Length: 591
Image (cartoon, rainbow, N blue to C red; front, side):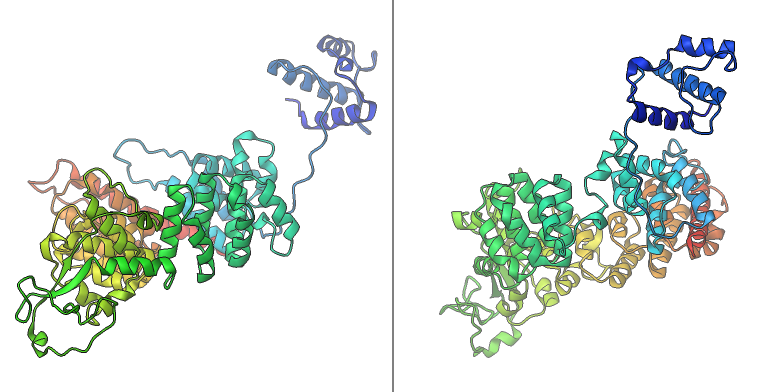
């Protein structure tokens, strides 16, 4: 087989030097005639490069012509040579890690089919982990693997930031020659190539002329480095942006959000787009002390009051003379406690949901129309409490701490709505003390599943996984481990997904123990395939040796699912094998 690479260079040189037109290219018949007669008897109708024999030049031309004929392409002058790829100064991968990456990319489409995967590790799920680990060492990607790496990133959007960051500037250079890789040029994962604040002209040019994703990346990068500069840049074109673009740009302000952003966000509350108004309101309510937070606090205060259910209250359970049971007057100021009988009274929270959603509430982000199945008043009430500062409730409710407030009974069946709203507020305001109070003990039945209210009422909208993200990573893992120990794995999948990787030793042990218990109980094995997949990716690789005992195939229980023990044995073998492979990958990447 004739190598066409040299011919491409020769044709380029001939075309650029002589300006050869397409019609001047030798025909196939001319090349065949020269070959049959021999180059010694007939000079080939081609131009040889310096130092190249006539025979070699003829063979190169014949190879190029063959490829063109098969592709149905007409001869044409050679294009300009591309600008060389930029250098990548990062150190190369160790040889073993390079071979591992080639294997992972070759198997990125997966080899397992059906429900029964066997004992082989799932390489498609190991590629993201490999990229994350490689990023910690600052290696550069092997040039020969860049096409496969770009193909993998094209097929899986979740891989793109890590894959493009690892691929570096040469992948961006290469992407210009293949339309299927154009995604790499849209700013995703290439923040290092963005202009810095020391080049304001380049920043301005990219902001005004760049692709939308490049502009989003630029704004996010500026916000990380200089929040005020990022906001100032956004303000220059805010009025002329499309509504969907304004929404995305506004969402970029979450990083580095400070009180200095309040005037801009307050102005955005009057935006013509409802989604933009809602996002602006959400951002403002996550900042303490803003004017919007104050307005929402006044509205929320009017909806919830502390009443005494024991002696000392009137027939309605409330106090007269402008003071409720919290000892707070209508302005929110604490009044002296002169009623000694309050010490022995029982207390509860009473809810009076708003009866209308006026224009001022809607401007502050309250959506007027509720979803199907929700009552209007409950819908408005939840939005008000979600946006009200959580720090105010202790002052309003007699100085009680969050745990004591959450423990108070709630009258007339409003507890689920009230606690759900507080859960959303804790997530929005990243308030760990309220998150702890609302989560409670992981062993309590009220926490199970996150689909019931704190009082066990059905229909709760709270999301325990989101609430857990407010806690520090160690505390989060400890809580989830306690939850699994008490309730098993049925409702723990999303909670495990928000825990730091690799899992802490107590969390990993709780997951493995629960899987072992499920196997011994004869549980249907495929019900736990999701958790088993998480364990393969998230358990500490050092735990592999301790799990060897679980790979044996025990006797099948009489009341168990047919064939379940075989599946469990395969699953544990795959888990151990995957952990050992992850440990090997980690060792291969070490300098």
